[in-house]
Image (cartoon, rainbow over all chains, first blue to last red; front, side, top):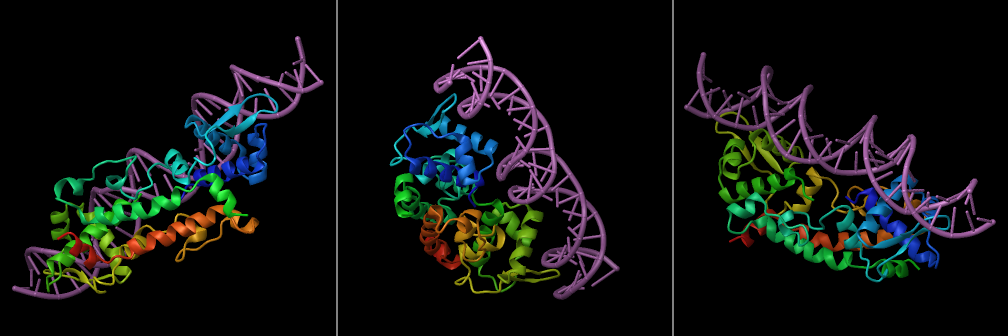
Length: 138
Length: 138
DNA sequence: ATTAATCCCTATTAAACTGGTAGGATTAAT
DNA sequence: ATTAATCCTACCAGTTTAATAGGGATTAAT
């Protein structure tokens, strides 16, 4: 299941996108509007900033805004930054690949086939961007 | 990510299926063949038995065998029994549905749309059965 | 220059989850 | 009766999760 961090992250990014403010949006405002625990949200925004998704402005009337275009920020990317791999097994992960014992010992693990196919079906859906998502809800 | 319990469960069921023995297969043999910690495997087999996937025979020359047909035992079913929901949010889960705060407050949560679509794409792959999987590997 | 609002960093915590272990009771075939 | 197997209950150490707490650094409006 999705962590609450990822859910909060998506909600926060959607909110920032939808406000379309030229001035940055403060964590406080986002937290209030989206009912996210303030301090918890702060740490999530830090993580997104570290990953170069958003940028921040300090001081009064400071806050957060997109660094990358919302068209290019996908749900998959947010999940990878915060929760890690999309794939359900490390041996079928593209960005977090790791061998599993079974794959080493057997010529081709039966499980691998399923979860490689699964990942392939999941990606197109998760590659939707924040701006796409925002349009859908209207 | 998949829990090791689910991975072990799938491997164990595949092994039982492939042995095609008329006599039940002991946890010990499965554990040795598939290199699964014996006691850990036992508890997994208990769970599968409780869920009426397999049946057991006690005593010497006892062990485990399919109760349902391997044609009808899907990866999705095993995952639901052991790890819980397939869907990534409870509000898009069929078998473990639960409301989330956002879904209540807003007319239609944007996130819900994505993860409902995601679930829809995942299911056909995860509805493959043990016997299908077994054929694929040959 | 003060101050108010923010970012940013570190630490702590309670609860749940994960991946096992341990030991004994029960059952049935020999 | 012995043995080999399932069954049942409890335990445990380590990690993760979802926060909370506190405070320092930075900035900009006044």
